[in-house]
Length: 484
Length: 95
Image 1 (cartoon, rainbow over the protein chains, first blue to last red):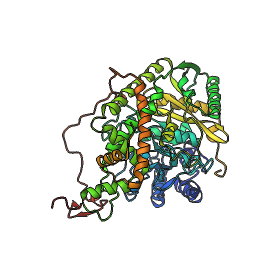
Image 2: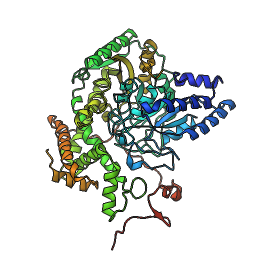
Image 3: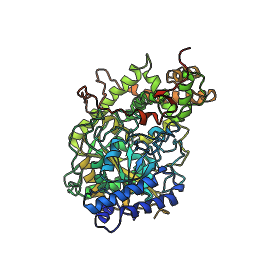
Image 4: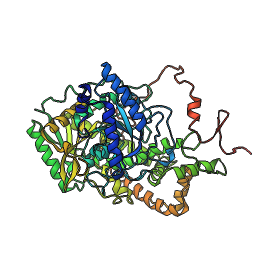
């Protein structure tokens, strides 16, 4: 059953061919047997999952069931789950058991999705390789010597390995799309404000956005409505109706204008990745799309601007971890100052501390204009580039990441090189646009992702293009050897 | 902007984060590299560009000034490092 999509599982559950308890037991066994190779889960919530599965089966029998009822999924360990430890990959929150559910968790529970557990991630979502977790690095199922990407690397690896059919992720600079690309799965970062951030542990609040990760676009179209929608508890949530994304999935692509940005095919793009992306664009042309050349002239400034905006907001958001009300507290503090500084020094890992320091510096007296204000102005230029591009194109298509999965440890000591893993994804967050990554080929046996960028609230169109592509290709159905 | 060990100490103090003395030189090196990288922004003239704080230029919503939260003191204190009689305990602040 683990090779089935959410759509197929849903059908089998509704037809009574399988029960949720059977599905959940199967997935739990698979996690137990295979996850030691991947480390994609931080917490497996076996007992809770079985209880929820029994409740889902009752709902299915009584006819009170939706498309996700009884379907086992996993949540990135950044989403608060009532009664289940939520660590955010950090020693700081190693003992944190939230007394409430994040809005995303609450809504997916209401839809009947069963939570298998919490997936591993870069600490506080700060990373592009899932190596900075307090719980150890996540491995890529396509080659366990390589990283799965990050920060939602646990979710991506778990879906790719068939440990779960779907998982949630969050994307601040590419953290859904880049691991989706490196693991060969489908991931969608919605428009900023589409999915509530309430109960989703904050990293950079003007960029953070939760979204679905699964094998197919159709599965993402099933998951997104259960995650999205207005939430008065999130002050930046957008009041706008969530469509039934399944409706438009099959629409033909005839006349669709695909924008190709020159800037996406420079910057030392790996040759194998470039070739696979060209092939995928050919496939979209065969499906009826037209291509137009566009330009995003400020895109080379996206990563620099991001590494001011994101650390600045992080330094502010992470100021809450003071060892007083929850989280790690250093033992035997001599005074209050000692307690604050040592709790934070011990609780945060090296990359998180780096970003807190960069952000603190950028926001400190005398430097605010040169860094944060400058970055916000550059952010405007980047956003204007996209606005102009969407006058000419309906969707912008290019590579998700400049290369395939790299080796564990390869970029760990060089933050700037690591940051450039997100060179194609970061501008989308700065502009607040929806973006997707879909499996589009392989290079030396490793998955290549195709990024689709849409205009604001055009998630439906991205899912439509992705679905038509997946009807014509089988890259999304490839299974890593050893995880059949 | 190149940062030295004394800069790292000062920023760490502002950020309320203890950094092990032996790690300070590495932080100085990393932070300098990151700042040199982000200073690429200076290549572009942003005179007259309005800073962007929200992707859709939305403003914070207002809500009626009515209580919306229920009292969950027990649930919240159950996860605290140290509490007593409904209070959070910290090291002595005033002598």
